[in-house]
Length: 76
View 1 (tube, rainbow, N blue to C red):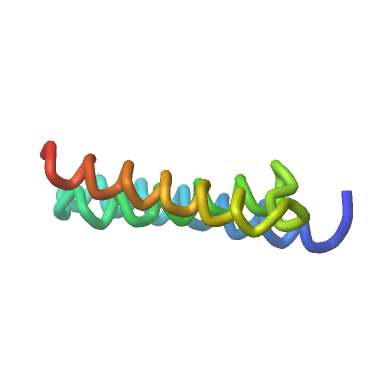
View 2 (cartoon, rainbow, N blue to C red):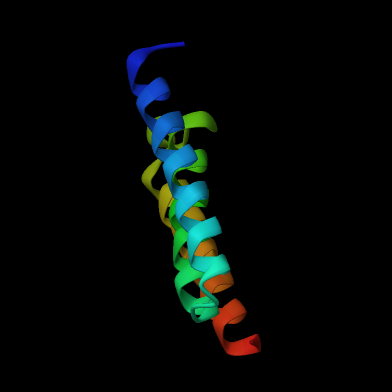
């Protein structure tokens, strides 16, 4: 495992703790969806090697994450 993956993993742990803290304070679910989208982007980009994929796949993954966040916010 290289240094970049380790730093991203630490960031993901921090974002998980942040989402737990936001959930405990009963904040609006939009904040939780945004944290989850950020985590999904980092997982896709760094651990699923999306950073080395073609631009169309990066755009498609980002658009899908945004669509899920929008759908989640609208449905709550």
